[in-house]
Each structure stands twice: as C-alpha cells, then as structure tokens.
Length: 149
Image (cartoon, rainbow, N blue to C red; front, side, top):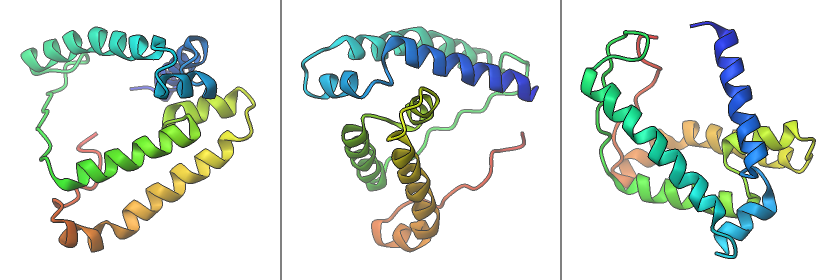
C-alpha cells in the first residue's frame, strides 16, 4: 500500500471531521452536556455505515486487497474500564480525541498542541508503566508490533 494512499485517506478523514464539526470544542461540549445531540447522530451514522463493511470482511475472511483477515476478540479486563474512563475524561476536558487533535492543529487552533502533548505523554506513560501495572491490575500480556505488515 502506498504512503500516498494513507496520507490522502487521513487528509480526507480530517476534512470530514472538520466540516462535520466533530473537531470543534464547543460542539463536543454540547454533546457531553446533552445540549445538542447532532454529534451522536454523526457517530451513529459512522457505526451504521461501517458495521456492514466489517461484517462482509469477516464473512469473506479477506481484506479489500485480498490479504487474509484475522480478527481475534480482545479479552475483557479491568484495564478496559480504567482506560475507557481516562479516555472519556480526557475527551471531555479537551474536546478532542487523538484524530481531532491533529485536525484542530491543522485548523490553526494552537491550544490543541497542549492536547497533543497530553496524548504523547499518556502514550509514553502507558508503554513505560504497563509491565508494572499488568500484574497489579491482572492485565493481559501486551502484544507488541503490527502483525506481519
């Protein structure tokens, strides 16, 4: 797969996030305060569009490019809850999850740089602390790498 394809796909995704308002701080806060439910509709539409595609990919066992597709269920553990709460708190505080952080920076919103620093520090802390937390929280072994791609 060409690097150009991934850059174009990411750019298109960022443009859609920007145009839909899904990267706007006030729009995100209105969603969390239940003042405006439009973003829930956007998220629901994304799930409704994506779910049949994933179902088809799983049914045929191959990716769109003919590669073998192996999707293994991830184990449920207390780390899912802890990570989900941390993600949600960060999203509610900054109005951004990782994708919109880059969109906001691209839109020239400099406060998003602080959110990007938070994403990078949090990712680094996760990598550095996982082995210590795994035993204490009974987390599964961390799989490293991206597969054979």
